[in-house]
Length: 150
Image (cartoon, rainbow, N blue to C red; front, side, top):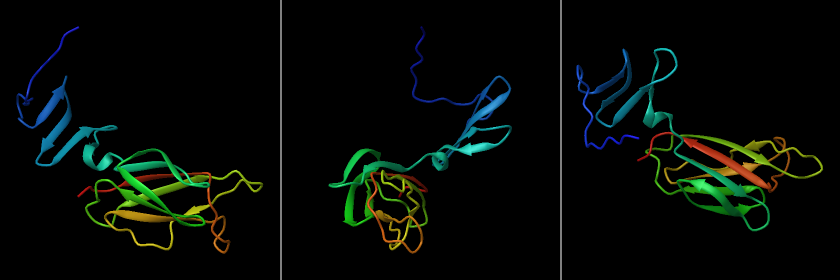
């Protein structure tokens, strides 16, 4: 096995582009790096990464089972939780995907984000089955955050 140890990789014909064979696969500029995706499309590595996620036990005393870029979770009452980021987001315009698991006789859990404003530091989740139903605790809550870190 060979090991390559270096501090800087510079493209031969274009200093900011690395090519394998005849295909440019990585391109870099200030604070941005792209990689060749499907076909000829370029994908921004920074934009394409999840900036945070959580696997939360939402029943009883809540507990974070596993997470990334999450400094804590708060139980605000029945079916309402706040997730706090370790590293803040650049602005409050990020995206959150939320899902849940609930072990009840109905075995349904329509998760919704409501009753709260996104801040750069945190967001709230509220779990209800249907729009007019009361909120309920969930056995497991899952989130994924996408957007720009500060």
